[in-house]
Each structure stands twice: as C-alpha cells, then as structure tokens.
Image (tube, rainbow, N blue to C red; front, side, top):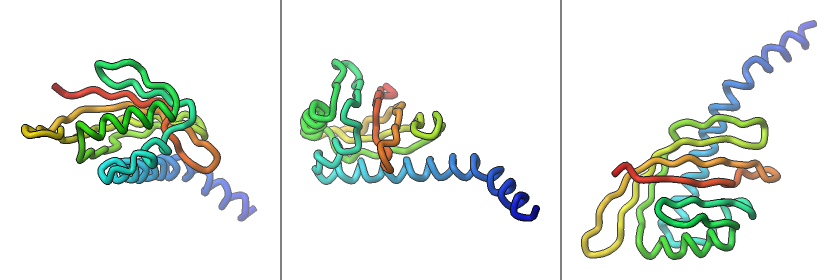
Amino acid sequence: MRVYALLAAACLCLPVSAKAQDKATIQNLNDQFTSAFNTGDIAAVAAHYTDDAAVLPPGAEMVMGRNAILTFWKSAAEQIGDIKLTAVDVKPLGSNAAREIGTFSLRTKGSQSQEITGKYVVVWEKVGADWKLATDIWNTNK
C-alpha cells in the first residue's frame, strides 16, 4: 500500500516538474543555438532543426528542409549577429512536441549597426532523445 501511495504522489508531481524541465531544456537549446550562430558555426545551427523543418522568416519565402535552412542561416550570418533568444512560455503538446513563445534581440552588421528586437513562435519535436526545431517563425517589434 505504501508503494502505491508513493507512486501516486510521484505521478501528481510529474506534470509540473516536466513543464518546468521542458522550459529549462528549451532555454538551454536556445543558448546552444545562439552560441553556435554567434561563433559562426552555422552547421551546428542547422543541426537544431528536423530534416523536414520549415522556417518562415518575415518578408521572405518559406525555407523548407535542413539543407535549405543551412543556406538561409549562412546568408543571415553575413548581415546579423549577437543573437539572443529568451523562452517566455513553453507548452507541451503531448510527449513528443512543444510550442515555445519567446523574444529575441540581434544586431545588424555594417557601419550603422542597430539592435532589432522581436518575438517568435517555434514548434519543437522530440526526435529520438533530442529536441529539434520543426517550425520557426518570427517578426520584429517595429
């Protein structure tokens, strides 16, 4: 009987701790993404995406698939840097997906560099033991 009570108590705690753990996990992945981008490791950036991921950048066509996403981010790295991502909310969508809402900031490159801020929504999918970006869309605040 005691074992059942302990098991029931543990199960009641799972949803809260799993959600908090998912947000921490997602923020850690965001930190890895930004570190890779800011150091020019665009292959590591692209590795954060599923093979069939979609990127929907503002004012541009959709980018479909990891190889096209690699090309997209290589081009972007020529124009922007110092990216920061902050997970604001992570909502589990079952056991193998999550929706993240967050904010970003970055700096444009060039003689008149400026800071740009905005928000994003991404869908993460669990692929094996890893969380990967499946859908990525963002826009600026101004």
